[in-house]
Length: 294
Image (cartoon, rainbow, N blue to C red; front, side):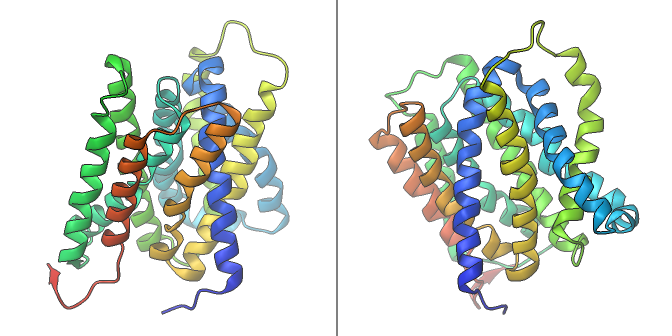
């Protein structure tokens, strides 16, 4: 098993802080730009920064060799789930979104078990149930009145997490050895092409001006471009099971940023749901032992 260094731990924490802020930026920008147009701006701004690096480092041939799988991963890890989360951000807060996002390892484990026949321990099965219970607690929070749009937003975010979990399995099983820069930049390129016609159709009648654009660029360049490069590099260095541990810290940072910059309240039900989800993630992603289900 690959050893986790202090550098790896530091990068996990930094990546968690970066991705935790993405829910803040989504919450700020999605109601202004609309989900699809916002995500097109997100992937284009990330691509504008990374594409020159790809060309300079000679990674174009690597993309051409693996473009079909990179395109598939792009749809499931960027284009579609990004839009789902942007839609959800219009109706529910950044903290709740990040807690729902914490279910990604649970979905990843389910896909690995069902599709790739990976072993699943009984503790992992217990983790799946506890994580699901955490989501139920969040969805049926008596202190929240979501309305029909809020319920749809929660389901949209959960579907995005399922796609993320699928994309992680595709990356681990089909893109081993491919650089994180190539996967990220290639994914941004494919996503920008796929979303372009929809973004033009859904563009705002009057484009916003002012500081809101800095949030869009931070979402695209920092959270998407550099964030995914770090994530894929961590997968290659320490494995997907460990890299996905960012899930533990993302809600902490997201709730913190949401509380500081958006004034979002932190309720006991939200904390309870978060604990259940993260406990479920912890049990689900434990190293399998001899007591496994096949």
